[in-house]
Length: 233
Image (tube, rainbow, N blue to C red; front, side, top):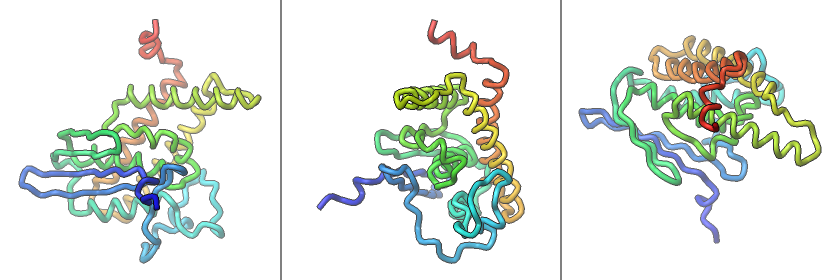
């Protein structure tokens, strides 16, 4: 019988303080769906319900979805980091299926990377449009690395659309629309978390994520991709 674990992508985020204190956060994602393997939805706080956490551009129906898929996972992360200041310096090790990553940084840098992974694989219909990136998760990615990954994956997707006889979006206009939607989502998430959370690690991490989204849309809006074009000439 095949091991059920073979159907999962396993990521482990290890936060180590200089005093020896350590926190480990594990993420398990189904390989076929690229969706999180979530624990049973038990004893979730009221704020995680879709009616309380819903983004202005969310297409989900409250009668069909009691809880917001992003909020469910945010609740787990907030609870996990509730006793850790966001700017505390730590050693962050990410154990991934293919290799390990190590970085000395503040907590919010690790939480930001963790949020990017869990939000894309949460089942949210907005940020879930980026779930193809989950399989190639790159912790601590720079803005330029993020741009290359997103533009490359999006254009590859357009190739598959063309192969089906449909109209591809070579000018990436719909990608711009997607990232505008993601910025609306991130803004809502940060505001909702601020209402329920005193510690700021997760809030600051959402701000970092939003900056990345803003960078990509800025590049598209201003047609300022020359810094990437020079890599190919």
